[in-house]
Image (cartoon, rainbow, N blue to C red; front, side, top):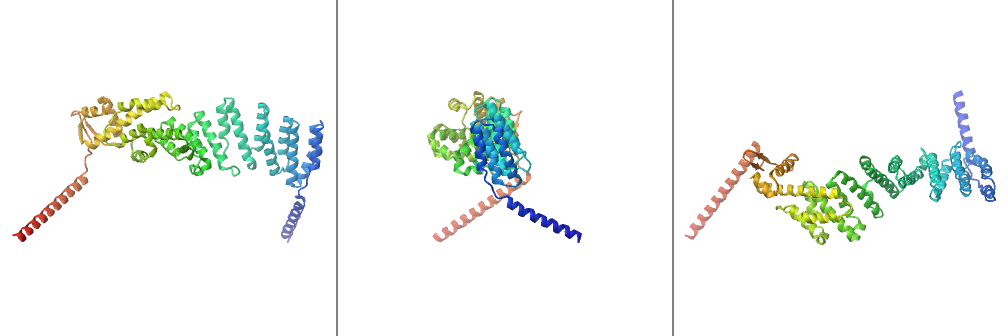
Length: 456
């Protein structure tokens, strides 16, 4: 009975507290008090005196859970400090109000949002930095102001970058996770992550750049309103893969850009994107995907405006020999027109193109020859025999082609030996073909005999 009595008294006390809280939550307007405090500051009075008149009111409103009144008073005190241009008092007031007992979340949110507006209006860099650091310290660990903290972090990183402190800007940005923020729209989230990726690339932190880039789901770029962010994203992806010289990945990035409406509307930019697609696809190692993409790209109508690139695709698609020296001069001139390609990058691309053309020619020769002498193959490829052998061995190692070299005889065989089961299957197929041929011949002979008998 004692236990039930305690439970009953606890329930009644909770009910009484709920009733009391509901009566105290009713919002009270403090417009007159705020106006009087503002008048004190406007008349040249003490800012501290004006704040002291509002602090007891803020305490009363806060402890009575008056969200509207507390928010009104907190924002008013921040505005008073700003109007008085007393930035030290502004920082101190923000810290003081945020640390008060049982401070309401809504009041802190309104205070941080109001003070954040003053950051862009502050021209003194030292005071601006101090205000940002104060707001970031106040908002640290508070989920209800994490969006404002992320925006302040981006502003702080931009300030460090402007001073040339790229590494410091990257460290500041990388600590903020925005992909889980519910109060930030898709555009702002994407812009923030793209800024993180850009700073990682600028500081040559390629591993972290890839990790950041993977946070963006490419399906968001199906929204036409994010078309500019799509171009920015794939431009950064190209920068990352150029560092690794992943030619096929660079092609995929330009291929994704190709579907952008803004790119298609800009003819010079469209031509540039199409040229780079052809170049990087030709530089990619030969495989089924590369072959399929070449056939798909060759059907692009805009290639008629770019005869050289159309010819390059046609040469790779056609099972005929062609040589790098015939294209070297034209490719050198074309690569020089791309201002984003350094001289060393252009030389690497020409060297890789020579290698890809040689691989294409070896595939063509393997399709027409079962066995060929090393000297003849080197002559067809227009390469020294040593270089030809090195390239052939590399292709065999990568399983791009089957070949065996008989060094004493100087002969290369492109035909793989057959297993016993394959030989048996071939023999069975040959016997079946022979029997079918005999049966067909006997039928024709019998038919001719029948016709001859009828005529005679």
